[in-house]
Image (cartoon, rainbow, N blue to C red; front, side, top):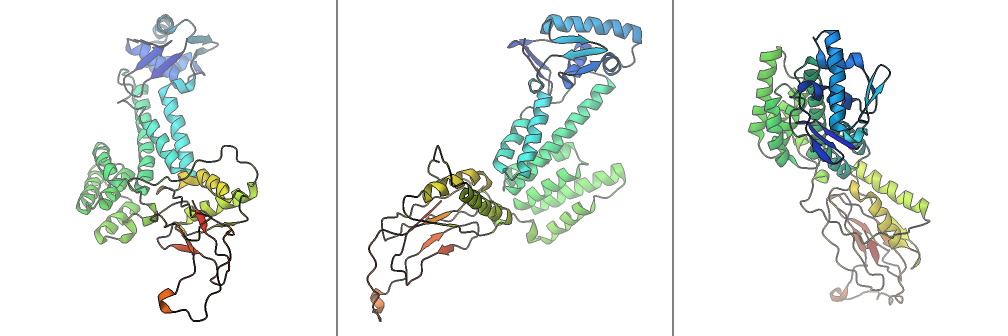
Length: 405
């Protein structure tokens, strides 16, 4: 029988798809203690120490046997296995919400380290949504209190990691409101206070950011007799001085509706491995360095330049929080299509090729001013706010259009 156990909030148990009720503090305590080590052996001595605490050994052992029997009646005879020295809960670890939370949190932090911010954001949100309220309130033992504090500390750590990601993405307005309540509930947590100060400052609420610092300082001095750490004091001074270094970098600000204009990727893209890897490396390097990069793909018509550019852009699109822009510059026309407005931070590839148009007529030696023309050129926007230009020489007899993604 499949089990689902949730105790990141009031205890909820499903056995075989049916919600079941577990009553009694010790039944709940034993089930949760086994669930924390789901699939592994929990020694009898550990269960007695954690759940029965001060009860006598003889009485507690008999009560444990009764509790295990009652839990099997409720969850199914195979739910709890008796093994030498203890018991094992026969449930997949990801069917226990505390283990699902830990797994999602690890994945989110790994995605952050890899620069996959959109993936990390979704994973952090998924992990935090598993929390439904205070944990283990049904069990009144020292072990339950210690475990509840540990789990709450882990939740706060994940919240702070997610807040760092959201601050970097420009979500300071929504974040300021969420962090304010958390900072009041945890008045001695310095990282939380620093994130609240920065969110308030970037939202144009510098006086409130200074108030948040003073609340933390008073709490630390009154309860611990110490001042905030040096990093937080520097942040306080920077807010007082309105240091531009506190502002969100322009290349990191999210647009409300990031453009996503890539055509569909080729379903079965093969070969071009070296070229694709070089393009990807150029774009990833530009993203990490917040640098302007223009990459040109050159070759005769029909060899797959556009397919290569689009395929690579799909592979790195999640790294560029301001979206992805694709501009079709029409390979068969001499007149270039107007470019879309620049994205502050977008994945950009350029492809250009020889035009099939006939050679241009020779330029007159001294053309009248009224008919003077600039040489045709194609412009691609990159992560810089200054447009980067890729143009053929004015002396070229075959000016070619370009395609950008």
